[in-house]
Length: 165
Image (cartoon, rainbow, N blue to C red):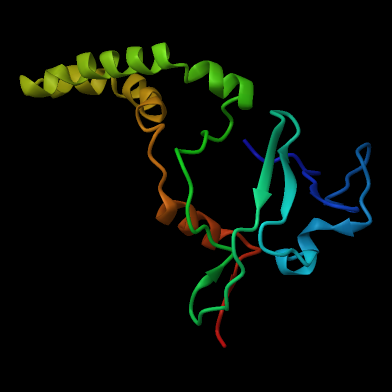
């Protein structure tokens, strides 16, 4: 699922976003604004509304401002907790509903049952259920945060810059 075209960035006194016909307008184009342009200081917060259709709102805080390191991509993530919700999962409430503890336990039990044919070398049965097993994977990895994968995804974004000096 694609991001909504006008996902705004809120910083005290300013809103940045991508306007479109029939939607809100913004004074500044978010594509042209770098985080450094916001003049943020350590511990300062700002909000980002990611997807209007699913109502994702992120409250971001600057932990630390460090010197640029040659050869490193920016922006980058230095830490986090738990896995992020999968793209297109239906928003915060839908994600929470899908990941309630009893559902996670049920997913673990079902995954164990689906993987049982591996013990008997019955790959045909396992392959017949591969789509169902793939659907369970997000529930099985909720506690895992992969900073490297996130930074690799950030590096692929068109707004990412690579330090050369």
